[in-house]
Length: 213
Image 1 (tube, rainbow, N blue to C red):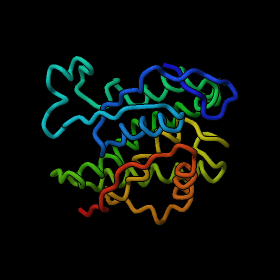
Image 2 (cartoon, helix red, strand yellow):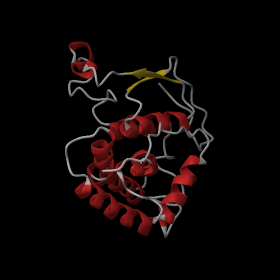
Image 3 (cartoon, helix red, strand yellow):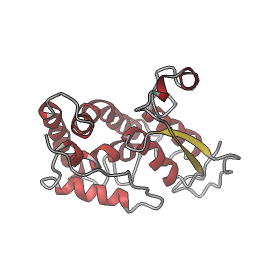
């Protein structure tokens, strides 16, 4: 599979078949991959996986992902890195050491503070889990503080142009109100969300009504 780079003059051939994305529609991990595929202008096919029915734990699916997770590749951030390196070189993932390190730091934030903060609070409230969402909400606020500080210096998280950092952080940040995390006090973050949403090829993530504890 090869893709046309989003902001490159290099013309790359399109994949012969649409990329298959195994997903659950409410998963931000799946949405970040779908978002990136669309930003790259790639043809893709969405394959819904019945997580509630346990489809992801059945033998046929475990052959695709032995961890029983969606998307199928073990980690959604790894998929982003693959797509960027394979199909959009030098655009979404900088080649220079400092630029690459900045993006990697935000990918780590997506797998850490974002996953255990806004994403975890959303799961608790959206799926009515028997946990207190307050610790996850507090971690979400700390990450919003860091993001606000970064965005005060530049329009995107890792620099002046969008990178994988923005793709990885967008979905669960935009959906933070579903976990009881109010974004009204974070204008810099909301402006950043709007900049992502204005990118050619942007696709929204399905929204649920803002949840309450």
